[in-house]
Amino acid sequence: MADELLDVVSNDDLVIGTELRSIVHQYGLQHRGVHVFLVTPDTQLLVQLRSRHKEAFPLALDCSVSEHLKTGEDYRQAAVRGLQEELGIERAKIQELIKFRMEYGPNDFEICTLYEGRLDTQRINYDPQEVEGVFSYYLDELKKIIQKGELAISRWFVEIIKWYLGMPSELNIMEIYTQQRILLTS
Image (cartoon, rainbow, N blue to C red; front, side, top):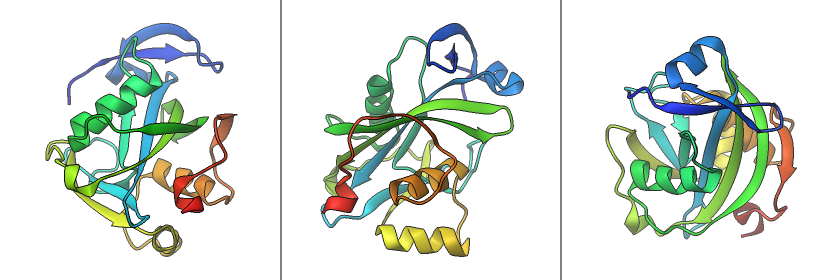
């Protein structure tokens, strides 16, 4: 994976510097990320299986898209870029749900925004270097998978799903943009 330049941010999400991704993770510098939940026409959540080449949680289930923000990029730009790079999706209509802080793992502290949108499943053309495969699950299926520990799941995906379902989670919510969630209102 290329060593991209990331913004280092304060607890208030203000840029206080820039650093290479490897240095950010080596020293535990807080940085930004974005996640996207895409909902299929039959109200399932599109879930990606992370590439076997990923450093963190290879071959684990993850959000439809998860991305770091590159230096100078805003959350929406990163979400749109991630949709295109990981799933080959252009011009997706997404809405912000929340902004949160979380410890993703050792030396991995992020401030993230979660987006949600609808998906036409015919438009997926995932990048095999980024994603091993894509699947879709109903929320109750995901809840059971998490509870039983049947499959490898990225730590952040578990916490985001718990929050989405109204369960206690490790997300430190900074801002709620909307209370309406597609999967809970469909």
